[in-house]
Amino acid sequence: MNAVIEPYRVEIPQAALDDLRRRLAGTRWPDAETVDDWSQGAPLEQVRELCRYWAEEYDWRATEARLNALPQFRTEIGGVGIHFLHVRSPHPGSTPLLMTHGWPSSVVEFLDIITALTDPEDPADAFDVVCPSLPGHGFSDRPEGTGWTVQRTAEAWAELMARLGHDRYIAHGGDWGSWVSAALGSTDAGHLAGIHLTMPLARPPEREVELDERDRAAMARMAGFGKNRSGYAAIQGTRPQTLGYGLADSPAAQLAWITDRFWEWADHDGDLEKAVPRDRLLDIVTTYWLTNTGTSSARLFWESFDKEPMRPTDVPTGCSVFPKDAWLPRAWARERFTDLRHWRDLEDGGHFPALERPEVLAAELRTFRRTLR
Image 1 (cartoon, rainbow, N blue to C red):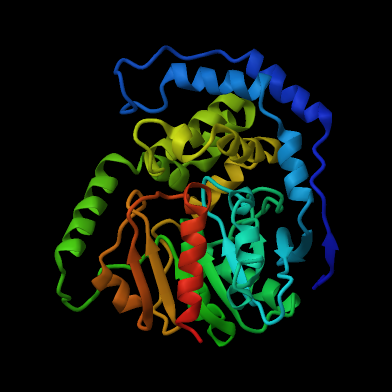
Image 2 (cartoon, helix red, strand yellow):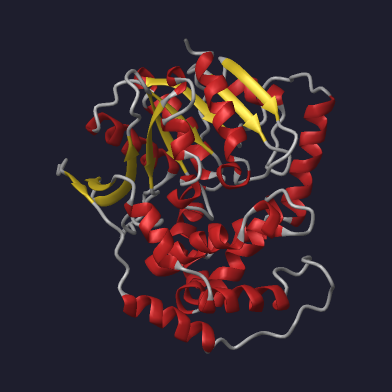
C-alpha cells in the first residue's frame, strides 16, 4: 500500500479553459420548453444566460486561487488517488471534522464555511477540517473498475483519517456525504466521536413505530419526491455511461443537468441567485466540467443507490434538517441512530447548507459537538 501523502495544487491548463469557451460558443440549443416553469427541466432562456455568463464573465482562476490558498493533498487508497483539503485550526485541542460532500457538489461547497469552523470566536468550538473529494468527483481519481460503493468509500475515509493521525473525529455530510458519514458509524465506530447529518437516511423500521405530525409530513414529502423528482437518480442509477456522453462533450448539458438540481433543492423564492450566487454555482459546474467527472460521479448511483444496507449505529448522532432538503421521519432515524443527541428542523435553507446558510450550519456543528463533551 502506498501511504504517501503529497501536497497538491489545482492548476488547470489555459487550453482547457479556452476549449470550454469554444464549446459554449458552439452550443446547438434545443427547442424551448412548452411550459412557463421548470416542470420539464431547466428552461432554455435561463440556461443560455448562464452559459453566456460562464463564457464571458465567470473567473475560474479566482476559484482556483481560493482552493490553492488552502492546504490540499492527494494520497492513494485502494488504488485510487484521493484529493482532500486539510485545514488545521490555530487553536490547540481542536476537534477533527471530516466533511463529505454529495452530488452534484464538490469540496468547493465548503470554502465559505472552513474559516468559521477552524477559527471561531470561542476557541473551544474549533475544528480541524478534512474535506475529501469523493472517488470519481473533483480532483480525486476516477475509478477504473467497479466496487467503489458508499461502504468502500467509508472504509477509505477511515484509512485517510488514520493516515492523518486523527484518532478521534466527527464525520459530517449531506447527500452522499450523509450516506458515507453514517456508514462510518459501523465501519470506524471505534474512532468516531460523532456523526452529524443534514440528510439523515434510514429504511422503514421492521417494528411498528409511532409517527407524529412532523413524521407524517416527512412521509408525504418522500412519496412526492419518488413520484415526481427522482428522474435524475433513475438515470444515473441505471445508465450512467449513456448519460455521460452528453455530459462529457457539452458544457451546456453539464450546466443544465446540475442547475436543475440546484433549482429543485436550494431554498429560493423563484430566484436561485439569492440562495446560491451564480459564481458559486458555476464553481461547482466548472469543477465537474474541467475534471470530466460527470460520468464517474453518476456511477456512484449505479454502485450504491437503493443498494446500501444502512446498518444501525450507536455512535452519537446529530441531525440538522433544512426545510428544502429531503426529510426523514424522526421515528425512523431513532431506529437507525440509537444515540440521537441532537435534532433540529431549521427555518430556512436547502440541500446545500454550506453554500446557502454557512453560518447556520457552522452553529449546528458547534451545538452538536457540545453534546459530546
